[in-house]
View 1 (spheres, rainbow, N blue to C red):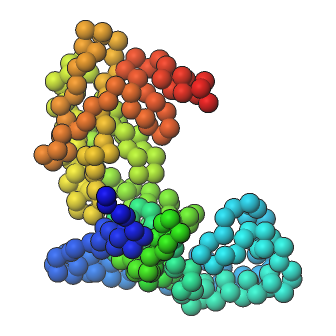
View 2 (view 1 turned 180 degrees about the horizontal axis):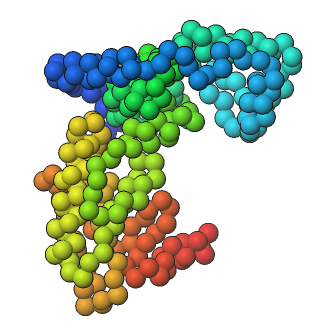
Length: 291
């Protein structure tokens, strides 16, 4: 029987995060990033001096009942801070904005998300959008020197430093991922995207046409993902054909990602919804009724 321990999972996550780049690729992205930063303005749009009133506004948006982070600070504690505590927070935020450095404790995490997002590639795209060098450097500080550990069955792994990926639980991580994939390759079919879930949808009269178009687009997306060190995982990709032709009820789409065939499913789940061939949602409704 194979025993999985926390340190083994942490090591695997570290390997996934540690992108193996060629020297020429490293040189090119550093050159591109330096060029983008040289075109950025020096004055940031951030407020360099935070006041207690701004802290008050921010804390009003903090919801109670949420879990504490690695620092162990609960939302209720922040919401009940007195005047001195809120003034201290204002001073801390001011120092972060002016010195563009985050506390090392804030770079610790129990887990990671979007684990293959390439840090230098993201900073290049951020610099192209933000156009303020100080803001980009602050975001770089947020993404640098990050470490994580895995908790499993009461055990915890040693800390490991992350080279890439985004911090889980951060309100900025989904935004960063959207920015990172904003230039996603154009496809012939329609794309429906939610976070890192992508659905490709195409309508045609013949199966052969659907297969041809979808396979072309899968190849196009695969090239884009390779360029930006993302993964189009065949094992997490499912195909389904929506139609009312009962004679073709068992017909499967022949699709491939690279050389790996894409599995077909009669009732796959997408964003929590079970989808069937004729869109009756019978399976989904049946599950809800049992609950």
